[in-house]
Length: 147
Image (cartoon, rainbow, N blue to C red; front, side, top):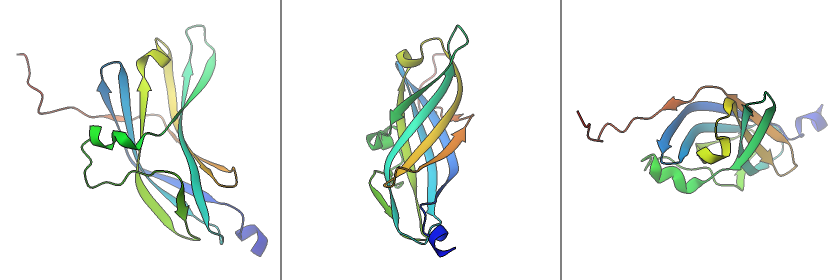
């Protein structure tokens, strides 16, 4: 049992998710916490977003894009930390923060989005997944209306 408790075991929780439309791209932000349920220390080596979509001819496809912590400023989250790998997570501890991605519209063209899957790979190569089908849009209330 002791050996089993020492195996890598990262668990991801989603607090919030937002998207913001920009010219020719969609910016995505996810507030997450990652807990290390193992008796051994671990770390997050890579964070990616997998986009699952269906092509116009009905084929199911997946696209992975890396996180981009510089996008924190696009959302105006001045006090919120961005998670930037590598991130050490001690045994039975949790880290929390935001992960950001830019999805270029040209990558999806006229394809139908099915879901977003956050992927957190640890230093042992184990991947923890978190699927999110719906993301809340952000509206710029300071933008002037043309009415």
